[in-house]
Image 1 (cartoon, each protein chain N blue to C red):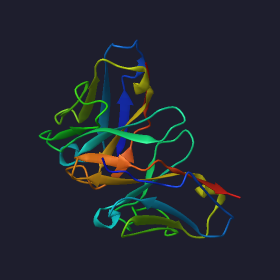
Image 2: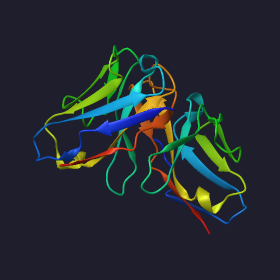
Image 3: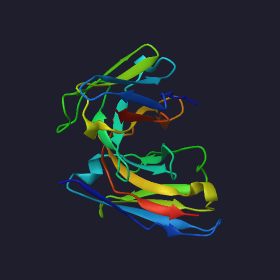
Image 4: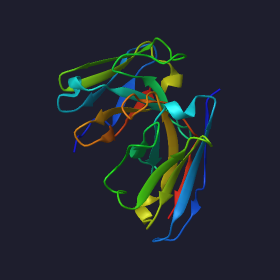
Length: 108
Length: 119
């Protein structure tokens, strides 16, 4: 089955740029979606189809996807960005949705 | 505005059954796929199942295949998850989530607040 690998944690100072990676075999050939989840809340879609943003999501959130790695980039990080972030793809070979294990973003 | 409201969770003994419901409003329900995603306490997101816009296709994660059944009633804007032969490892908050598309691959743009299942 298809596996997505994320770092368990990323730390960044306010105002800096956070990059959260999502590794998978030839992930560049798939559409990657990213979710933000704060404690006690439902997930929120922040990037879809590798690099598009839903309406209402800050332009500080951006995404890229190539080769074996997709990346969520959060620019000018704010304390309110502290959350768990998950990548997700549809694996057509198994007809399964696959989530990465999640990355906890800590704003120092 | 788009709303998804889950119900039906609770405490259940191993081996028993439970049926979750997800009532949707604020969008053309019959045009979109709907997912169930769960989250065990302190753990990450785990996809459970998806049903296509018209109910003609559904897919399951391997650990629930043969035990869980996803269905939908487009006349009532509701999706269901029938869970049989429940196991302790099924304990989680269960979310329903609207896909951006008619099948399962476009990402989920709206989520309910979840319902807790405790086995």
